[in-house]
Image 1 (cartoon, rainbow, N blue to C red):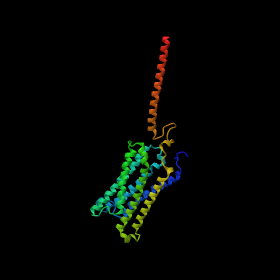
Image 2 (cartoon, rainbow, N blue to C red):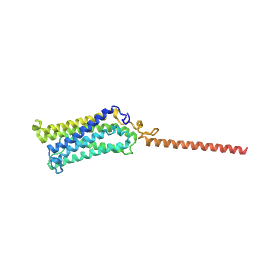
Image 3 (cartoon, rainbow, N blue to C red):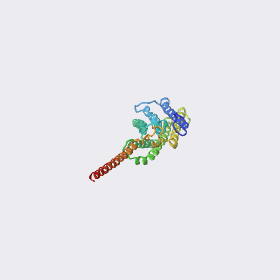
Image 4 (cartoon, one colour):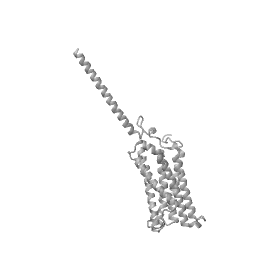
Length: 289
């Protein structure tokens, strides 16, 4: 069908993508409703309103935006775009997620220090900080190896499976830390006695946790289907003119063709020179006879 990308189970992909976007957006809305309706709102004064930035920014950046960054290569209508452009979009989304995660960490430490609350004593804080550190490392190495044009192709090919696996592992770790975090917050804010009675806030935030899990499951499913991968550049010939070089291989093929052309020109010129010299010699021999 004209205008429809050549993707297997395209309708299913669109349904899952739409569901993921909807669930992710609703998760962000739920985090805002939680802090404004059940907690103290948002602020930056060292109080509870400052702490509330933590769940909002984690859900928005570290969960929702990071999830979109993971599947951005699989959006079929972007396959006609250059791979370099998609790399910048992927890196940009991850950078935004990283900035929001760091700001959320600053809000937590600032709140704890203002209230003389110990830092880094819970499993949630250990896993959360570990995810931030490894996410920063993943982002830095991604820039250095896959975005900047200095790393050799063999190194990129060797590290790509590790890059993909570590990205998915960090995403799952972030979701686990988020679930532990919202449960920990409910236990501190409501205490276990009230929480066990299923108050409205407890039910609402439990639903937020379910939304986060559903969003993560949808992203991981789309990211793990091999037939939804972006086609290799050398095979992506649909978007290029007939006889054109495959996108992404253009520079490489140009360099190769250029070097081959140079060699051909040299060979041709040498052969032509030999023929000219032979004809001159032959003419010289005839003139002396």
